[in-house]
Structures are given as C-alpha cells and as structure tokens.
Length: 463
Ligand code: TTP
Ligand code: MG
Image (tube, rainbow, N blue to C red):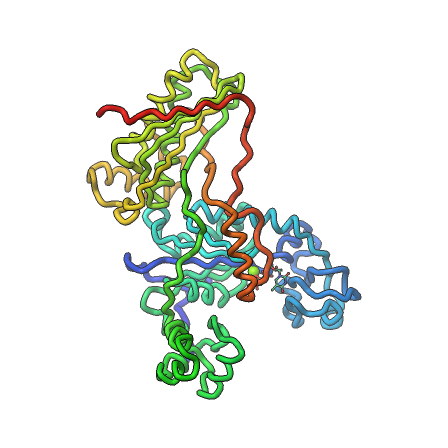
C-alpha cells in the first residue's frame, strides 16, 4: 500500500498543524538548478530540453544537470554528454556558469535566513532550516514553506521543492518526493507511515555492506526494515544496525548545524541625505531597534548588551555600548539605551549613518521564548509578531514611525564561514559532493570603513 497525503487543489500535500514540542525542519532543494537559471535568463530555452555541462554533445565531459524537459529523454546528472546528445538530438547544450549559480545560491540563502538564523547549507542548491522557533513569527512549517517557495519564485524566478518534517532525514526525503515545485509535509507522528512504502535506497547509511545484509533479509522497502527484528541487524552490522532501524522509523536527532550561533544581531542604515534632525535620527534608531528585537525573538535570544553606532558626515564613527540590567528581546529597552548613548553623539551634527546592535546573548532565554516576565508586554509583542507574519515588516508601524519613510532595516550579520568550510570537507567525505554555496553564512556586508572608530563601554545605568 502506498502512503499518500491527501492533496489539495494546488497538488500539494495538506498538513495538520504541528504539535508544539517536536522540531519543525525544512529541507529545500532548487529544481533542476543550473538548467533553471539558464532558462530563466534566456527565454529561448524555456520549455525546451536543456543540458548544462561542458562544451556540447561531442564533448568528453558529463552532464551537470538537465531541465525537466530533457529528463523525459532519460538524461540525468553525471551522464556522458555524448550519451545525452544521442538520447535527445534536439537538446540545447549550455556551458556551466559556476559564478552565476553561486550568486543565485547566495540570494536564495538570504531569503532562507529571513525565516531563521538556523540554516545549514548542504550544497549549492540545498539547505536545512530549523524553524521550530520561527513558528511564533511566521506560522507553521507548511506556511513557512509556502512563503519560501513564493519568495524564491517572485524574487529570484526559480522553483524550489520543500519537505517539512520533524527530522532532517525525513524532511530531505520529503522534499525529493514531488519534484519539481513540490511541497510535502509529514506531520509529527506520521514519519514511519510516510517512510513505509519507500524503497530502502532512500535511507541514509545504506552502503554496499549494509545493502548486502538487507538483501539477505529480504528488505526492499523502508517498511520492511521497520518490521525486521532489530537484533538481527545489530548482530550483523553492530550499532549501525540499530541506528538504521531508528532511521527507518523516522527517528533521527541530528540537529540542523548552522555553525556558531550568531554573536550579535545588528541593523544599520545610511540616510539618503545626512540629517541633523534628532526626530529623524531617533525614529530611525527606533526602526533599527525594532528590527533587532524581532530578530532576537526569532532566534530565541535575549541580549544583555546594546550598542549604538553613529557616523557623522565627515565619516567619524563612534560606537558606544552599555550592558543592560536585564537581558531583553524587546524594542523599547533597546531603543531607549540606543537613544541615551547616541544623543550626545549626534547632537548638533549632521549624521550619515546610524546602527543598533544587540549582543551578549543569554541563551537561557532561548528556552523561555514567550515566558512572561511581563505578560502584558509579551501579549503586545505576540500580536505585533502575528501582524508582521501576516502582512510583512512594514505593517507593524509604531506611532513614531507613522508617516515617515524610514527604511526597513537590513540584517548586518549572522554566523561565520570558517566552520562551514570544515563541514563541507566532511560532507565531501560522506559523499555529498555538490559544490558549496559561496561564503556562507554571509560574509560581513561591506561597510564604510573610513574615519575613526571610538568604542566606549559604559557601565550599566543605575536603575
Ligand atoms: P541537484 O539538486 O542534485 O539537481 P538539480 O537541482 O539539477 O535537479 P533536482 O534537484 O530538481 O532533481 O543538484 C544541484 C545542482 O548541482 C545541479 O543543478 C547541477 C549540480 N550538479 C552537478 O554539477 N553534478 C552532479 O552530478 C549533480 C548531482 C549536480
Ligand atoms: Mg536541486
């Protein structure tokens, strides 16, 4: 019997809402990535069999990827180009443009990081996201998946398939199941039923030795493995046998590895025209503080240190920071400190850039994301986050921001890239050899570096 989620009109599977305790993990994978980018950029290629790779059908190289139109002829990645040319003489062959795909990959990662800092990029077109904490801000896993699919389509012009599940393994299998443009949601508790009819080859950790053992036991589907006595496999394969049976049931605690957690979250903006108006400067700081606080809540952090950065029109930059009496993830305390620290710096001067950064995270706060220190304030924040979720960042407009054209702040940081390079080496060892997206997580964005920077660390203010 084959496991089929009920389909709705869009051809996507329907989800039940996820319970609050299990993790919500997304696996995203772009469809026919290199070929789709070429079709996007050249309308003549759309709807046609396109083969990306090498110098054409007489080249000795192999196919990087093929458009779905070309796949109908049996063409696939790693196939000799000559074979591809034979299978489909009408196919259009396009050379690989690595730099372009890397750029697009980075743009997609930027979209993913809007929804959570917990993004693990696996290859140039694939990533896991742990969105468990983001549900308060963006909705359940299915809703986040749809928002990602829409954003990637509308902003980048590509289709992406998404799997939503409680583990990385099940999410990855799910994303592959209804390609292209797929969305498959496996609700908590349905992992084993979902995996049951699928061929054993979809499971991780099935190398030649394991495969031979499984053939001996007559295991063809993941369900066969679920029903096999665990002791048989442990005797034959050792502890790996036990892990394999767990995986067959969809049990896999592997966390989404996004490298070192962010050490700071900051927003900054450069004015279109330098401003000496305290009102303009302070409401801009409010927008920055508001963006920082929202991202702290998505990440589940509370910050103990607030930093304000003020750059004047002669490019003198001053950074002042203060430790708060209590860690926070709310706009007002962050804004108040930013203004108190900033006021002496911008008084009477034309200002070019302002920024607000929160750091010194209290990770204990992660567990108590919406535990009320102040229940009424929490309720207000929750309502604001719900509005943001529904209508976007600009909808949540504080009184001071109404009628102004304060820009939506951009994210300045998140993560490091060194660990990711180490991790990619490990991936290659594990047999995942697709190219890694460039410089991820984001390298620091370029900023003005001229002028003096003066850093003062002020003691906590007396209460
Ligand atoms: P995949 O995600 O495996 O393939 P795809 O995106 O082309 O198609 P789909 O996900 O819809 O099945 O790989 C991503 C890109 O990596 C692919 O577009 C080209 C490149 N690639 C190679 O260059 N060689 C390979 O052997 C594979 C598998 C991929
Ligand atoms: Mg892909």
